[in-house]
Image 1 (cartoon, rainbow, N blue to C red):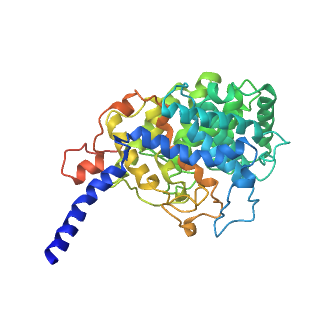
Image 2 (image 1 turned 180 degrees about the horizontal axis):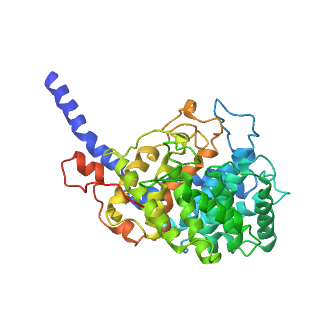
Image 3 (image 1 turned 120 degrees about the vertical axis):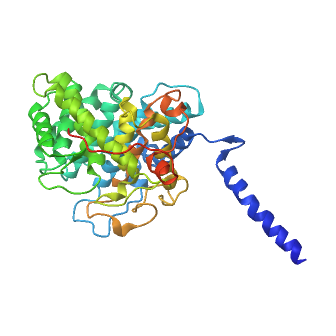
Length: 413
C-alpha cells in the first residue's frame, strides 16, 4: 500500500509540468506571444471603454485612492484612466480591420473607443470628463492627445465636426495651467503639437521652449534630469524620452527652422541608449528593478523599448525577437493572472498585486492605466519581424546562463 501511495505521488509530481504546459495552450493550440499580448490588453481596456461608450464609466468604475491621497478632486481618475489607456491602445487600434479573432477584438475596442471619445467632451454626457478642473487634467489630456497622434486616421479623422471642435476648445483652454518646471513641460508641448497637426491654432512657443529645456536637462548616457535636479526613477520611460522625440519629430516637419534636425536625430539616439539600458535591466526571470516614484505604472517602464520597436528604430544590438521575448516575460509576470485587478476588472493600487502603500499621493487606480504603454508594439502587424522572428534570450538571460553577450559602454551624445 505504501509503495502504491509513493507511485501515485510520483505520478502526480511528474504530471505537474504537463498541466502547467497545458495551461499555456488555447485548446490544443499553443498561445503565441501576440495572442497573449492582445488578450491582456483587451482585458485591461474593456472595463474602461465598454461602459464609457454607454456613458456609464463614472457609475461603474470602482475608484481606489492612495492612502496618502492629496486633497485634489478624485474625479480626475476618470480622465486619467481614459487618456492613459488610449495612448497605449491607439497603435493597436490604428491597424486595419480584418476578420481574424484579433481583428474582431480590435474592432470592438475601436467602436467603444470612438463612442467614448464623443462622450468624453459632450457636456450632456454623464461621462463628460473634468476638463475645466484640477491642473492634473493637463497631464492626461496630453496622454490622450498622444493617442490621437499615434492613431490620427483611426481615432481623430472619424470623429464628427462637433466633437473635434469640442476637443480643440478643451485642449486650447488648458493654456490656463502653468506647468511645473519638469516633465510637465512636455505635456503642454504634446497638446500643442496635436493642435498643430489637427490644423488648429497652436502655441508653438510652448512646443519649442519645452524641447529646448528638455535638451538642456540631458545629463548623459541616455538619462535626462526631470527638472533642475536629477532623480533616479523611470520618468525617462513614462514621459521624457517618448514625448520629447515625438514632439521633436512633428516640430521638425511643421515648425521649420525652430528645431534643428540634428536635435531630433540626437533625441532618437539618446532614447536608443536608454532602451538598451532598460533591456539590460530585465532579469532572466522577467522582472526589473523597483525604484523611484510612480512605480505603480508597472509595464510603462518598458515604453521606450516598445516605442522604438513600433517606429522601426530599435538599435542594432537589440533584435526584434530578443526584445519581444524580454517584454513578453515581464508582461506574463504581471498579467498572466488577475492579481492586478479587482473583482470588476479594474486595475488595483500596487506593483504586482495589491500593494496600496507604495502609491504616491497623486495616485489613484485611474493613474495605473499608463501600464498600457508597455503594449505599443501591438501597433505592428502580425507579420512584422517583431512578431515572427524567433524568440531570443535577452542580455541578462544570456549573461546569467553563461552565453556570450555584448559588452556595454557609455555613449557621448
